[in-house]
Image (cartoon, rainbow, N blue to C red; front, side, top):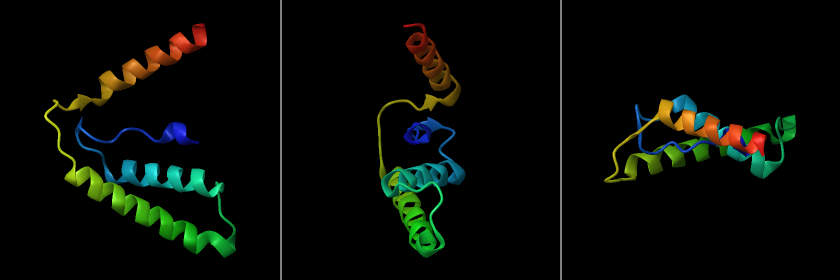
Length: 89
């Protein structure tokens, strides 16, 4: 599940709201153990997703770095190369 959580800081263009929301959903799924909560837990689950997404947006807005922004395409190519190397081993 957590493989879908990606680094969102210091990219050009910046992370979108949908990327932050997807990361928050994956985080809450992982720590709760639910991919889909029961009706009894749905409100708490959805509130947690919103809280994690809000905290993530705040964090991303406050972080600073002197490093140049990373390219999503370059980072994706690096990840594919690492995956190919792992599967070849």
